[in-house]
Image 1 (cartoon, rainbow over the protein chains, first blue to last red):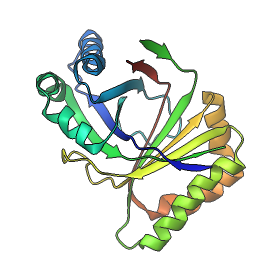
Image 2: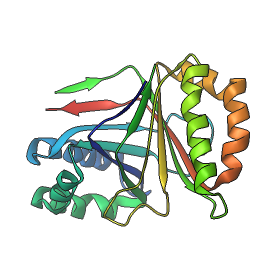
Image 3: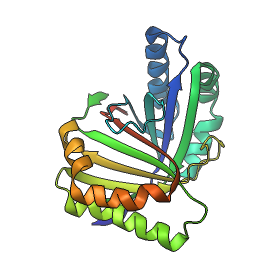
Length: 109
Length: 109
């Protein structure tokens, strides 16, 4: 079965700088998750750490995935003051980052 | 609301080599999607191309996200002959790749 969901997923892969403590990382993750309460077009948020066994993670340690209803919703999120403030704390803590937005085409059994 | 889903998500970010045609890319995407029919522990598959506006995609053009019920399911997938055969076609077509597996912690309104 193939379906196209009308959502946009916003994926961020991160490697934190070595000097960022696990307490600071935890606070940043909570701050990221809290954006879902502050920014209306952000509909869901999930995160996790790498458990892959293929050794192709390229040093990335954390992933964050937010869901929006449209590309306009992502644009509203990006310019939202709560996101701008959070980005000012979060991005300087990262050694590497990739941000990738997509409209999923979904296959399910 | 915070919940922990018992699944593992397997995320692959790709940049295809410049010499790979759009027809070849389309065939590779179909081959990737077809693994969901061939490999029992692979429960869902979605893919998309980058629509981000923040210019932090680092050259990646495609994302593929597969869902498994457990890390054991991912290991079974990785060693499955259908995946090994497909990887032999897919990986040489890529200029850049990141593979990241995670157990999502989910926040939803």
